[in-house]
Length: 221
Image 1 (tube, rainbow, N blue to C red):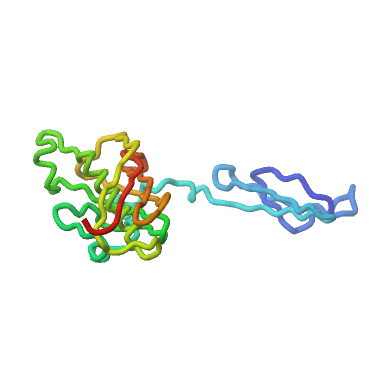
Image 2: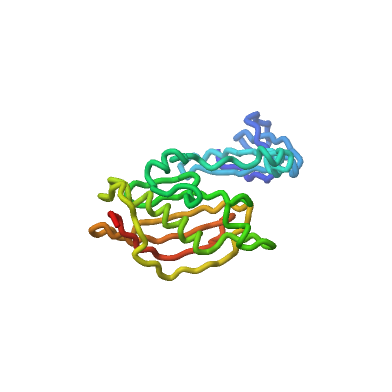
């Protein structure tokens, strides 16, 4: 049977209709409103092409405004919780700036979050009338995420203290304020004899707010 031409609002039925002009049966058709169904027609590129039609309801195209906003956004995954982070990093309150690790590729990279709240102890002084997270603390938070990567056995690290050996190309793109969630990615570029070179980027809402290159050294002071 030769393939029949199909309209976008036509459903092909396998029921043949008699025809006086041809010995081959012709398919009958049922019409549906175009605003209710859309069809995609495909033909197999074989000797006997077979048409088939896929329908999708326009109801599936509706936005998610009917879903309550508190149920609309999933939580960040937990790869390492705060207790596991405390087992790796030597930092403690008020200077532990990593709340959760959400992705970890051993010896390669880590992604973690810092929930920025008005209760953070730096906000009363920076600044009382316009609370903004200090840029140097964003750099420190990134470095702590880097520590989670470089202190792991996969890169020959240990649980000794680690220190800044240098920072370069640091840029601050947007202010970070109370209520933001700082998402930080640190990627290991090189590791030589206890010195790690890393690339770091911090995001809020998918936009880069801070980035730079880091040199860090592990070992005892």
